Length: 156
Image (cartoon, rainbow, N blue to C red; front, side):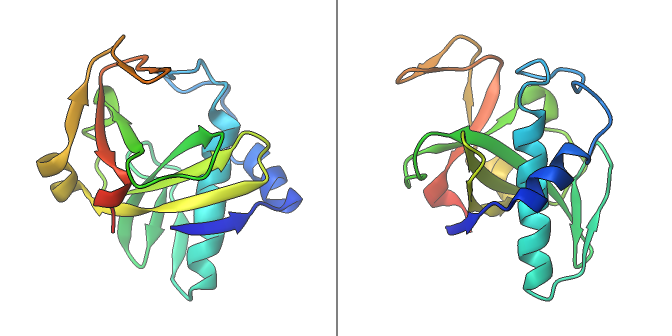
């Protein structure tokens, strides 16, 4: 896991990343847009600093091209640093996006810290994922839609 401080510049870039208010099938009716955009910006910057060729795709199926690979960034808001047994989520209606990898990022609720938790190929994701149904609970968290999950410790 990689812990990164989020800069004001990254937040401003994230605010300007998308012109829409809410994606179709948005779980939080658009309230998570900024958090998701911050996750994409942080991932973009991190991999660019690693001398990777990074392109923001603007495509529904994947967010970034990193050295030619199609990467879908999945970002969740968090209240504490991620632990190995925490879940990474891909909603059922997004599970058929045309990407090669899922990259999972957590952003704290203050938008001050991001955690790049890791990645998994879509092929491997399909083999190890577990389905959680809408209304099912994991502690105090309730799934808002049918969701596929993998654990942080299953990521590369």
